[in-house]
Length: 180
Image 1 (tube, rainbow, N blue to C red):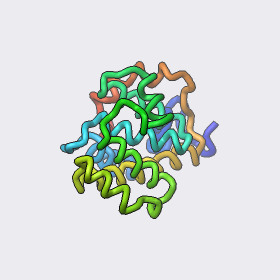
Image 2: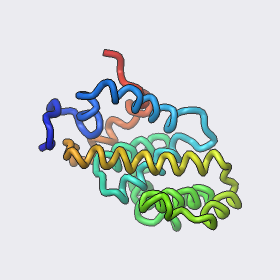
Image 3: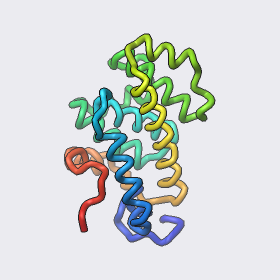
C-alpha cells in the first residue's frame, strides 16, 4: 500500500506522477528525450542500462517495466535480459555496451565511483563522449526514479507478464504523457 494517497490501480511511477501533473510533464518530456530521442545508442541499449541500474536498486517496477521494453526493442527473451542483469560482463552484448554498463553500475553506487580508466576503456571500445554522457545521465536518472517509486511504496504488479504484455504498447507510446 502506498505511503501517500495515490489513485488506486496506477502502477509504479505513474501513480505519484498522477497527483503532480506540474512535475509529471517536464519529467516525462525529459525521459522521452533521454530514452527515445535521437542517439547513437539504440533505444534497446538505453532501456538495458535503465534495467540494470533498476535491478541493482532493487526497484521491481522499473526493473521489469524497462526490462520488458528492452526485450521488445532488442527482440530477445526475458532469459537474455536476466543474464545481462546477473552478469553483463559475460553476456552476449558488445564490448562497448559492457563498458558503458560498467560505468552505469559505478554511477548507481555513487557518481564518484566512475573512474577515468572506465571512461578510457569505453572510449577504446568505440563509445563517444555523448554515449558516455548519456549512460551516466540514464543511470543517475533511474536512481532518482527508482527512489521515487520505492520511497513512496507505489503499487507494482508482481507478475512479469504484466510488463511483457504491455511492452510493445509502452515502446510505441513512449514516455510523454497521454493527452487527457
